[in-house]
Length: 172
Image (cartoon, rainbow, N blue to C red; front, side, top):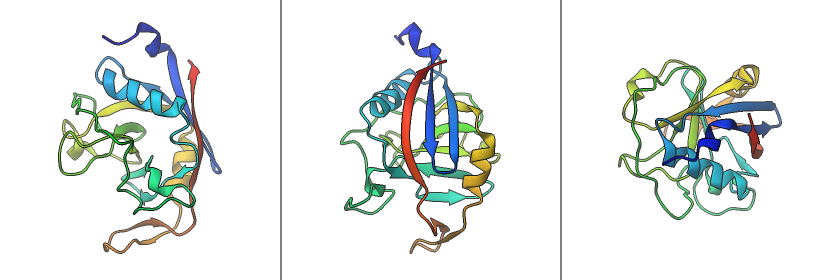
């Protein structure tokens, strides 16, 4: 059961490009929402970076390996556990917040992405758990950060670090 108060909270993602505010969908992804809020409250996301940016698709962050001085390849870190997928009927469209994962459906832990365009091919395969309610201009700025190949051929690694200064849970 989700705490009824959880519907009254939002996340403020603070970046050097400005702030984005996300409203949660605890009705369709209660465990995912609670996990994200727990990690945010613990300061887990503070000092991470958006390590994968694909204009027209999404911006991805939340990996602990993106913190300054961290070891490990960006995009491969987790909080030390996995969260069971909560696939739902919410559409992956611009502004939607969803959990990143590996090929295994239940492999999400802390990494998330915000859709920059229509990504309906992800529907019911990734856990959508919220959407931007403020800061679409910041999403646009982040999606337009110049990128380079990160070694795997995909040109999605930001040339300059795109830091997540903090993610704060606030009353809606």
